[in-house]
Each structure stands twice: as structure tokens, then as C-alpha cells.
Length: 627
Image (cartoon, rainbow, N blue to C red; front, side, top):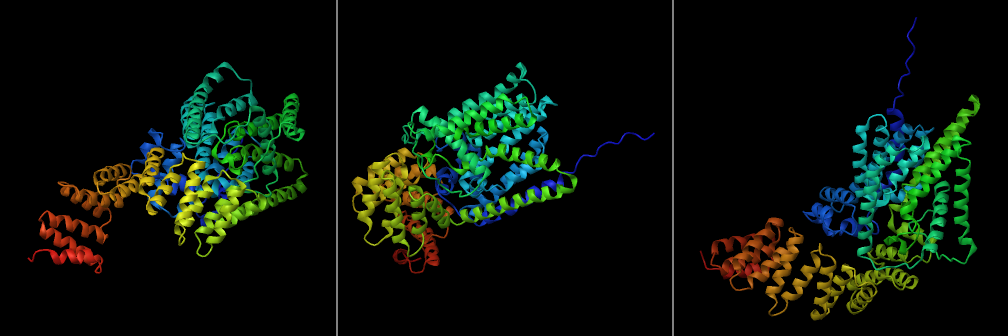
């Protein structure tokens, strides 16, 4: 008698390779992308990213704009690898997306969801995800989702081996430290249990650590999100509730029919007295009631209830009950539904697999061909959307086609045009359009000021534009700093000094205001000592700043008895940048004053090797006593 046949486990390599391969194919155009709006604040101009002790400050201080230290740590590390080259950051984002896709596949399979492969595949190539993958700033979405899915995977593994629950809790904490939008996970886990069986007392005990982490870190996130922003929305609860219901249907529509996707959508004006704004709320409540009423009639209704509930719950942090910065431009955005989209694609994959399985065997090929065609269409849309995000001018132009009154799109297009030779007038027109669309938009005045500073004779107007930006938003350090620079360049140093001090207070991690303040103070007849303090403050924040080292040495050299300190700082500057001829010449001059003639001669010789036309070095070399 033959022993009973044992079913062989299905190989995972081939379907996993297909998922990863198609996702990679969809996102290849993103590798050619550059930096976009807000990448400067988050990465390229973020002083904490550049600082040697940035990791400590991300994790242990309140200096960052948001408390997402895990995401910031990835960028801190990559800055030391890629610097200002966007390719590396885009490649990492794509790699994280591939990891999310594979984890989603395995989580759905572990849950026993039919068509787990198809659910993951639809998510992998869905064009709504492009904003989260192709925009470097949205790294936070990807990092958070990786640990969000790991936490679920290990929570499910804990059903058989309780030791997996501790790693699941840790993974959730890491997800929250990637981005706080994963806070609803404890509700999702409770929903998973309730979907499969009745909740028991032990389940609430097991879920307690997740709820504690969610509440504590969500509170921290809200504090960080609001501590540096003036309120920009005065909506009451009812207005926010109506907007939230409308947003749910907006996102579901984009998930099911991803047409006319945009970097920024038109801002909504919610009118409580308009019945049209009550329809989405009534429809959401009605659908929820129907699914709940008939949840025991069919596994598909129960699955639909779970998918709908998951979709709404995961959208919760982005529905406008708590404001985030982007909402002053639009209450909805593609990247807000990154986590929620999992529920839609999982249910669609399950429906697809079940529908094909019910077909006559002779017709199943046509069913799978149709599924393949739908996947190919989504993949093509994603490739096209990635190409849009790889070209900032096209990205913002498309946004303006779909939202002509968008101040953000006008402003961002102006920034792109301002960087291109010969297009300054076009840029100025875009900034003017942004101001017309939103008279309170400080960023447009700031960017116009930056444009005018570089234009012949534009400095007086630049001062006016920077001053207007500061009046509109006096709590942004960059606005105060650039106003100070323009005032100093206009011969108004006494007006510039308070602006630099304000910028330094608003951005305690930023070295630039201290350097600008020190430069202004150093120009005063009695300002050397105060300037030295500011240069030293800048170096504490940015120890590798060559400009601060050299300028600090310059002012120390002018102070009686501080020549030796000046020598130390010149030498520090040269260790950082040994090819700077002027620093060699400055060091040589101080060495000569100290009577260290041989060393002075060597430094003058080094300066002249680097720059034979440097007059100060040549004159100083000739003034030295003969050997």
C-alpha cells in the first residue's frame, strides 16, 4: 500500500520574480528623475541631514520638522553615499517599493485571501503609487509600509508561535518612526481577528502594546506637525466630517479608475448648507450599514466589509480631521492613499481570481488574458506617470492643466523655470500667478526675491519681496535669513542683523544664519569678538563648514592675542579643503606676524602653486625677510 501523497509546497521564486520584475519595469523611468518640491527641506538643504551628529538630533531632539527619525536616518546615511545625485535615492525608493509588494503578497497569502498574487501585482503597478515612489520626500511612506507589513506578517505568525508577537510590536514601532500614518494598524489587527473569529479578552491584551505605541507616537507626530506652522484652516468638525466622506470616495474613484492623476488637485470649498456635500457621507454610511447587515450572508460580503473598513480606517490620518502642511494647497493627494490602496487591490485580486476560477475551464485562458491586459494597462499608466514625475516642468504643467488656479503648481513651475537660462521672465510670471491665486503664499514672494537677487538692478525689489514673505509668514527661518542677506547687500546691516538672529532662533540646527550674522558683525569696526562667537556657533552645528572655519580665523587674527587660535582654525579649514589658495595665504600672513617665517613662506608657496595670480600671496611672500 502506497503512503498518502504529500502536497509539495508551491515554489515562490517564480511568482516573486514576476512581481518584482513587473514593478521594476513600471518604475524604471523614475531613475531618471530629479529632486522635486520639498526635497530641499527634507533632504538637500536639511542641515540635520548634512550634520555629522544628525542621527542623534533626529532621534533625540525636537529640531526636525517631523518626528520620523527612521526615515530621516536612511536619508542621512544615503547623503554620505549619493550627496546631490538623485539617482541613488530614487533607486532606494524603488527597492523599498519592491519589498512592500513582496511582503504584501505573503501577508495576503498568510491570511488565505484568494488571488494574493494578483492583489500584490495590482498594487505593484498601480499608478496612484507613483507619487509615493518617484518623489524622494515620500520615502517616509515606503519605510513605514515595509514595517507595517512586517508587523502584520509576524503578528499572524504569532498565532502559531507566540514568540513572533514581540518582533511584530517592534516592527510597528519602527513603522510609526517611519511615518505616523500607520497609526491605525492596531484597529486593522483587531479587524483581522474579528474577520476570522470572535474577539476574546486575550486579544485585547495582545493588542494593548500596539495601541499604546500608536497613541504615544501619534501624539508626538501631531506636536511636531503643528509646532512650527501657523494655523491655516478654521473648519469645524462638521465641515471636516463632510470633507472626509468626500475624500474617501475621491480616493476610491482614483483607485478604481486612475485617470487624470495630478501632483496637486483643486482645493475644495466645503459648504455645509449644500446637499451635494452631504451625499458622500450618506453614501459611505449607507454602504457600511448594508455590508454590516448582510455580513453573515456571504464570505464575499464579509470580505468586502473588511476591505471597505480597512480602506476607510487607513485613510483616517489623511482625511483632514488633523491638518498637515500640504492640506493648505489641497485636501487630497495621491500619496495620502498609499496604505489604504492595499485594501482595494487585495479585494480586486481576490475577486479576479475567484471570477476566473468560476469560468468554464475552456474559457479560463480568456479570463487570465483579460487580467493580464488590465495589468498591462495599469503598468503602462504607471510608466507614463513616472515619466511625468521625472520631468518637473512637465509635472507642474500637467498639474496646472488639471488645476489652473493652483498656487503651488504655479510657484513650483516658477522655481523650475528660474533655474533655466533665459526663462527668468516666464518664472516671474508664474510667481505672479501664484500670488494672484493665493495672496497669502509667502513662498511665491520668497522665490521671486531669490530670482530678483540674481537679476541686474533687482536687489531693491528683492528686498521688498523678501519683506512681504516675512510679513506673511514670520516663523520660517529661510525667509528671515534671505531678507537679512538682501538687506546686508543693500547696505542696511543694522536691519539685517535682527533678521539673522530671528532665523537662528527659528532654525536652531541651521548654521547659515549664524554665518551670515557673523559676516555682518565682522564688517563693524568693533564687531570682531561678536562675529567670532557666531562663527563658533555655526561650527558647533556644522563642524565641516570651511567658510566658517576660515572666517572665524580671520576675525580671531584681528583680535589682540588670538593669533594662535586663528592659526588653529586656518589649519582646520585646510584639512577640510586643502586646495583653497586664499586660506593658505591667510594662514601665512598670521604666521608671519608670529615670526614663524619659514612656515609662512611654505604657506605662501602653497598658495601660489594653487593660484599663481593671487596678489596677496605674492605680496606677502615678497615682504618676508630673505632666508
